[in-house]
Length: 331
Image 1 (cartoon, rainbow, N blue to C red):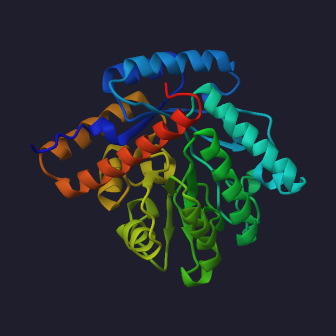
Image 2 (tube, rainbow, N blue to C red; image 1 turned 60 degrees about the horizontal axis):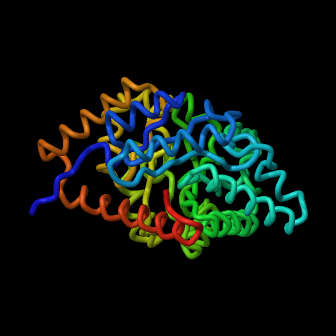
């Protein structure tokens, strides 16, 4: 029998309140929900109860996701050092704290953490990564070491991880939340930036996040998130990554200045992303779901393209369920 594809099974959708997330799940049945910065500071028992309600409303597994890098970008489990500050502590302290943080995420109900950041802090003018201390440093071996411990700690706790931002977000001057950012160097010149990804692929990182920057020398017409060269030729064929690729938030200014998010979601999927992340704006989320379903129904997306992402997503969900079973059950 020919598979039936539902647009929402390729989307992770964010919300600002428990009520908004509950309505999203009940109405659209997305692959996952994203706990945005609006959930920072809410007591963990309230978040845990909300997640249990969301799971009851979902027909099939629901992946609960968030950003919890340590430091600035920690929407659920707070009060841990930033990646930069972690490298200034004794390594044993970092190991203990990142294991504790991952275990606390799982205890709340988070399945998938959009971390670690593996961007190299090489450009002093960069505000979005280096300026917020979100990088483990400028040396590729240091970044790879700390990021690998991060991934292994989360896997032990039963939480999936994401290497980001592919590729080399900290080499840009611009903030992609506001505008398109640019990398001037060639791939050969930033060979060091690939090293942490190679280490994490070997360590079994679950996903990679495609970022909103343009490499002027490699693909000057497309941001990485829309580039088959970066997502299929480089990431899949040359680097051998077989896990899930997820977009960065498609409501960022870098995207919306170029095209509506609903068109961006379709183009990102066609380029090679498996999961589409829209963190904000209910009307934008619904427009993207409707456009994507139309593209499925009218054959704009080849069946093989839908199927390869469906399989990767199922494999990720299965790994998460298996880890939960090893860590006292899957809810």
